[in-house]
Amino acid sequence: MALQNSTIQELRDLTFALIGREYANTSAIYARLISLWNYAANKAHRASNYWERYLEIGDEREVINKNQISRTQSGKDSIDTFLRIYPNDPRKVRGGDYKFVVNAQGATLTGGLANTESDLLDLYEQDEDSYYLQPNNDDSSNNPTAFVTYKKTLELKLGQLQGGNTIIPDEFMPYMAHYAAYTWQRSVEQNASDSNFQLSLALVNSVLEDELAKISDQNIANSYIVKNVRNNYNQTII
Image (cartoon, rainbow, N blue to C red; front, side, top):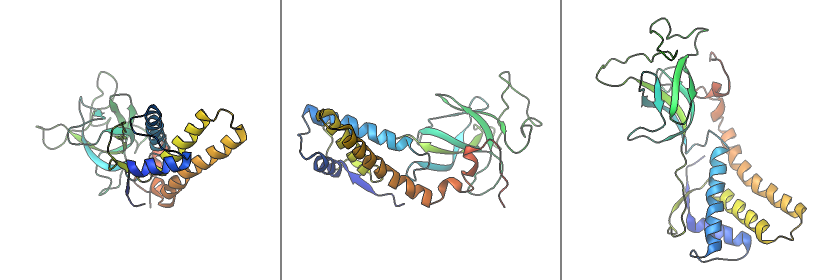
């Protein structure tokens, strides 16, 4: 799936075509459409962890406080969803990955998946919170690191006075336009029948499903890199 971009002007044009009228970007109704566009973008972003644009594989991250990886790090993209964490770069070395738990601040490493007992337990003492310590790296002057596969945070936040060349992810744009248009129609056409609205909603959902199908066609979720994200045990890949 090629990473192409649309613009907010293209988003406006498609939305206005669907609703059959246009609004100035200083109007109150246009402000409502912006809210719907932003909401739709967030819905699309949440619909999959494997959007090609937002999937980062094996990004080297600092481990702080012995066993924690922050969602943010200087010079790096912010992490929305942690998928897997490895001791080695998964693009170069196949092997086990760490167990971890996640909160608002980031991920806390709790052990390895390769064995029934943590593979860190034999080498490092447990800390006072009963979490296993992250192995040291070769350079004691730096924090140890781990390699993280994650979904990036969605940075798109449209505003009322943004120029027409503002970039919109091409894979999100049609869904944003359809969702905003049909939600707007539902709100202003109070006499519209429920059956017609359901048909419209089915069309909106099909636009997103078409984009999600492209992710499935690429077999990203079944690749070695992310294959056991949805499982609680490691798998041997032959």
